[in-house]
Every structure is written in C-alpha cells, then in structure tokens.
Amino acid sequence: MASAGFDAEVVERVDTRLKKLVGRFSYAYAAIEVAFGYRNYDMEVTTHDSKFLAKLVIVTNSRYYGGSFVIDKETSALTPGMKLIFVRDLSIITLIKLATDLLMGKLGDSSLVGRMPVRNVQLRSQRDIATQIDGDYLGTTPMTVSECPETIEVIIG
Picture 1 (cartoon, rainbow, N blue to C red):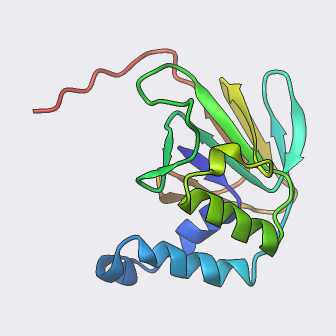
Picture 2 (tube, rainbow, N blue to C red):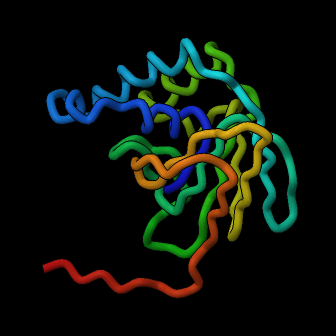
C-alpha cells in the first residue's frame, strides 16, 4: 500500500516515542494536528487510460488500511491487481466524513471516494506532497507505483 497526500503527511508527523506508548492512537493524534494546518494541493494522477486531479491518492493490493480497517472490499493481497483509491476534494468536513466511514467500515460505500483497478499510477504535483509506503514515510512527489508481474512466494514457519 502506497499513498500520497493527507495520510502520508500524518505518517510523517507521527512521533515515534508516542507510537511506542499508545500504538495506533498516535496516528489519530497526528491526524488531528495535520488536519488543522494541512495545505490541500492537487496531484496529477496518470494511469494507463486516465488523467485527473486528486487531493489524496492510495494505491493498494490489500483490502485493509491501517491494520484492520477495510478500505476496499473487493481487493485482496491474495489475488493479482491493484486498486487506485482517490479523493478529489479534501476539506475538513470531508476528512471527518472519511474518518467516520473508515471507523464504521463504510468507506467502500462512500460517494466521496473514487476507485478503479490499475497496473501503474504516476503522481505529479507542482508542490512537494508527502508520500508513504506501508506506513513508513517515503519522501515527496513525484511517485510511481507499478504492479509487479511476478509473484513472491512467502513461507511462514
């Protein structure tokens, strides 16, 4: 799972000492801090057949986000393919609605969220926008996320 925008900004802001003390709640604290000072910049999103602007972009091959929250009911790490999940408008009201939908397991039904299957996504912006991968801060845009054609065999012992 990779993303750019608000949630990547939150990942960058999380205090590691606080994370050791309170775990996932440190992300909620960072999200509140980021929400009130967040600058909402557009990203140009390019896929194999689309080009559009978005404020928050997530590319995932998992149904879950942040551990146990369902972000997309159709996506599975056990089947090929990635899903592009995006938000075009990201006001404070939208953030509150998205957070509520995520916590209640209804994000998949939200009209605020766009989604499409993808194999490759390019993100560009005129200003630096935070990016993250699997919950770790990566840097800033531009960012390219591509599907790997090979599978990786994982052995758990």
